[in-house]
Amino acid sequence: MPQLTFFSYPSCTSCRKTKKWLSANQVSFDERHLFRETPTVAELKRILELTSEGLDEVLATRSEAYKDLQVNIDEMMLSDVIQLLTKEPKLLRRPILIDGEKLVIGHNVDALRNLVSRRPDLKMSM
Figure (cartoon, rainbow, N blue to C red):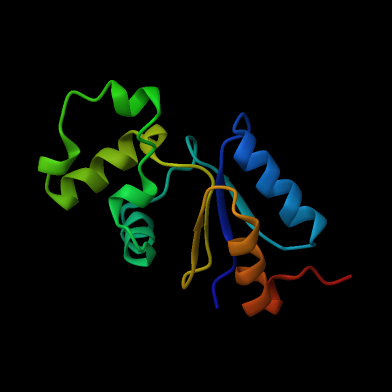
């Protein structure tokens, strides 16, 4: 199974809280800086496949980047939205955690517990 990928941004409070929780619970993860190591088109497609609410779940609609958009995302083709997200990762909610089968967006301790409980291989060996 794939390892846990943790897309984060160091200045993000939710990202810091999530990282602290992962570390305190000895969860192994591959951290990627969301703006420097932007999710690929394939990764974004997989993220969207795993959402329960589609784009609404992953878009940071309260962000300045979203408010400054000169386009209506609802009127765009999905492939164009994915391309936009690779170029403008600030449009994505943070953090994003994905193990290939499950997705957690934002700081959600219950969802993190659920993810780790079904993936004991994510625990760091001592």
